[in-house]
Length: 216
Image (cartoon, rainbow, N blue to C red; front, side):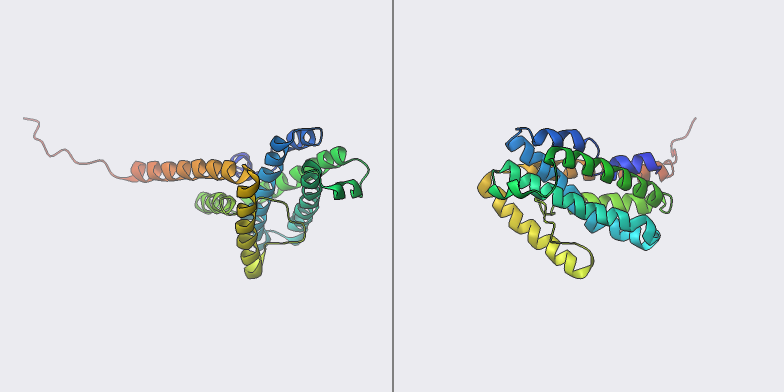
């Protein structure tokens, strides 16, 4: 799989800057949905993709992305507060939340895209397909809200990832937040496509059945 296809499958940030910037100027529940979608994908990326990258690439290639995930999660956390009317949003330490959201997403998207491209060069098609499947499966159980004080690497990170996902799912149910359902449906569709592609590849590799009928 080439890097463009890998970026298409694994990118968390494609098209997000405009949606999140718009969220700061009155998108209400739609804005919360965008924040949730991005938070889910960032958490899943941190849980499934970054560990693979850290095993295969140099720290200089991966550390900026991990730092970018943390910084962007923090911005999303403040944006979530703003959209829910939390008075603490007035304490945002930056100059302008809308501008800071756009800048954070743009910076992170560049780092993430470069990382995926570099990682794709180290993986064969089977390993890349396995990674893409792992990412989509992670989005189905990921936390649906930004949690800047949590990280999801290692064995402890796995527990925090699942626990935060379960708690957020309950909170989403009481507050009618749709992000988890929306991303879950997208993930299910992507996983079905992977299954279909795999079945097609297996079928193409099977020898043709012999013709047992006589020509006479």
